Amino acid sequence: MTYDFDLFVIGAGSGGIASARRAAEYGAKVGIAEFDRLGGTCVNRGCVPKKLMVYASHFPDLFEESQGYGWSPVKSSLDWEKMITAVNNEVTRLNGIYQGMLDKSQVELLQGYGKFIDSHTIVVGDRQITADKILIAVGGHPIRPNILGIEYAITSDDIFHLQKQPQRLVILGGGYIGAEFACILHGMGTEVTQIIRGDMILRGFDDDLRSQIQEAMINHGIRVLNKIQMIAIEKDGAGVKVTVRGDEGTEETVIADAVSLAAVGRKPNTHNLGLENTKVKLHDGAIVVDKYSRTAEENIYAVGDCTNKINLTPVAINEGRAFADTVFGGKSRIMSYENVPTAIFTTPEAATVGLTETEAREKYGDAVKIYRSRFRPMYYTLAGKDEKTMMKLVVDQKTDKVLGAHMVGTNAAEIIQGIAIAIKMGATKANFDATVGIHPSSAEEFVTMR
Image 1 (cartoon, one colour):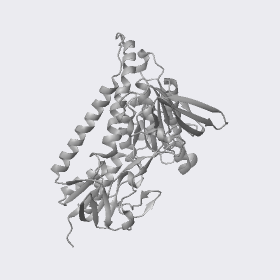
Image 2 (cartoon, helix red, strand yellow; image 1 turned 180 degrees about the horizontal axis):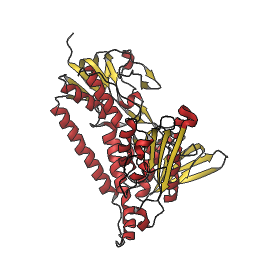
Image 3 (cartoon, helix red, strand yellow; image 1 turned 120 degrees about the vertical axis):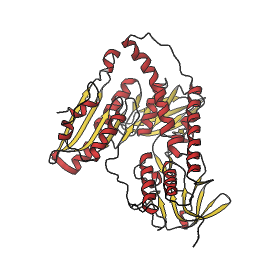
Image 4 (cartoon, rainbow, N blue to C red; image 1 turned 45 degrees about the vertical axis):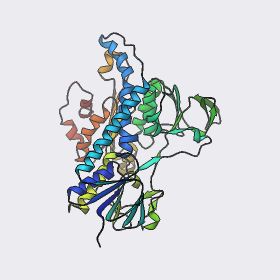
């Protein structure tokens, strides 16, 4: 049978575009559907605009810390509208770059929602197309929790489009998105209260990393209300009133501006795709795939957040390229989900790779040995601040293999990226010990811990 495309991709986010371009390099005729801006969550509502706002939030501390090095005091204020406009202009610039990349690869872009008619047929707007292979890369969306008055809350997607800076903000949720935005807005001068149901933020990360960040956030002035059992939001004049009840039954009311940021997780965008017209299977809303990203329908594949494996941009890109290499390039390979590094752009920053201490002890028991260091980096001595860096190695004593590395502190992401290479290659603690440190640096602590 003759098809319109060798490959058609639904979703032009990071994973979809990477897959489409790689398949086109192998000579495939490729089309891609996108109803929104190119680049997906990362470029438009995630990694890129968020990191630019992280940078913006650090300047007040830099102005203050410079005085310890002899610089005169700086009086400065944030022009929120200028900052948010600059951020969104950069996003628009990147959208154009993605369009240029698709054009250069001769990938045809169809603007609109893609929906399955059958396993080889998709309708996009008023156009119906057929494809031999189809890749689903539709990403995810923020969850709105079942809370009374949740209609008065915005999601993490909306923060990039606020016309005015909130002076008081309540953040619901203790995941990395909520923690990051708590630090970003606090750094810009907003009074932030973060509400979590557990006793600590960042569930799923190493406990030392979690406690170190939460302690620092509280010390910086972010209010964290934990062990909350009930949350209710109601309109209160120009703002909102958030009522919470703790596990001991005590109630408290927090008054915020016109926004209350809900950051309690994300779900795959698998609704209204027409998957019922195929054999594709879902589990908790996520598309079920095998190690080659293939669904239960032989010619349909899926990558990225819609499969709900590891929801990170580089993972989606790697999954997409592995799919294209295997299906169109004759180079069979699969994505490895072991030792995937990740960062949390809070203040202080954190990064991690490999097993947490808890995961390691569950797997290796008493053979696990922990190497941990906490110290004040040299930078803060003259700045007169008691900011701490934490570094941690999780080691299997039987093999001496480093199972995990975790860091909280300045440039954690940059440092852990290098450490991740060593751990991915199976480095031992002896290998770390034999490596000469760069002095003076925080990073050298990873090769000097005893």
